[in-house]
Image (cartoon, rainbow, N blue to C red; front, side):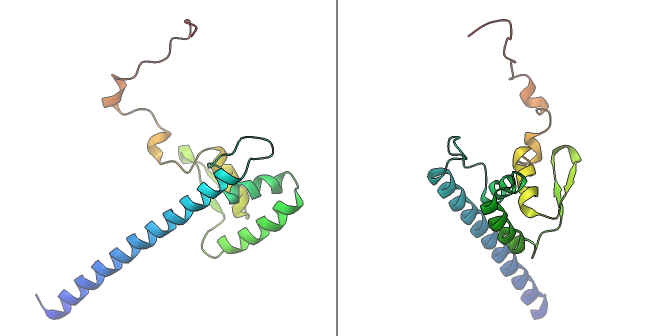
Amino acid sequence: MTRGAIFKLHGLAVLGCALLLLDCIVNLLLSIVLLVWGLCTGQEGAPASAYETLSARAGRGMLNRKLASRICGWVIDRVFALWQGPVAELPGGRTFTHPSHCVRAFIKTRDLAYLPADYHGPLPPSLEACYTPRDSSRST
């Protein structure tokens, strides 16, 4: 193997590690935001929930014509407009197109589209035998 090929392989390995580290940092930051959000806020009288992100809350407020959400949503939209397009992928192969990142985040949160596709489809055949549906005729 030539020195150039070895150098190229090392460069690709370093790039892969850098991308993995960046992914971990983004997930850590998102987790911190969700933790703070879940601990410090309730959603307009509802119990606190870490499932609603700042973007989704701003989108919900924008749709409900809240002034503070329109201001915060405008800032969030400008930040995310740098790298996100106007299309959100939803479960079942559906898409939702809207110019506002916050409104797309609200729709994705409402449909729980942040979950992997495995959560939206039928159970794998290996688990079907283990699954017993709740008997609706029996009261608990």
